[in-house]
Length: 144
Image 1: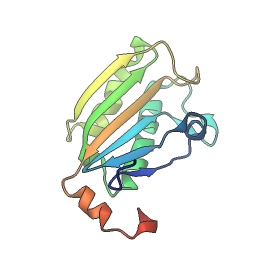
Image 2: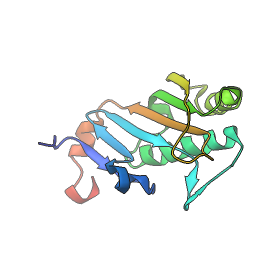
Image 3: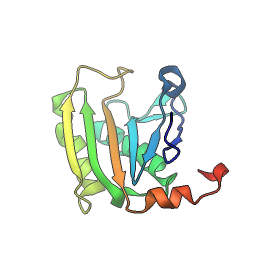
Image 4: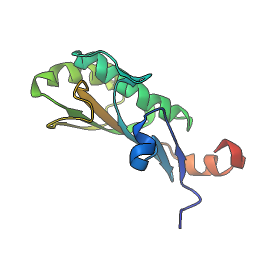
């Protein structure tokens, strides 16, 4: 049985229906955002540019957080998956640009590949805001 306090939102990834996942899930006072890449309108953006892809991927995550009224200042953990170790510096630079004042817990790992070989970076974020669950529960059913 699904917890009625859990809320899910979709995004625009074609993989959501294929794989069966939500872009983000609010569970209690936390919002967990699924892996995000620089994918827009059926195309990978910033091909060959790990900095640009990281910024766009985090932008997708921020859009999901906004659906719950959260922003980057609410992010408590990030995970970054890179397809090559040479991209560490550029992805780190993007992360610092976005989160230097927030300082979430962060993990960066190098993986063999992502779902599309042009994708160089995939990111996940977890966010927290005290009272979020109560605020979401108070919303009318259609706006959750």
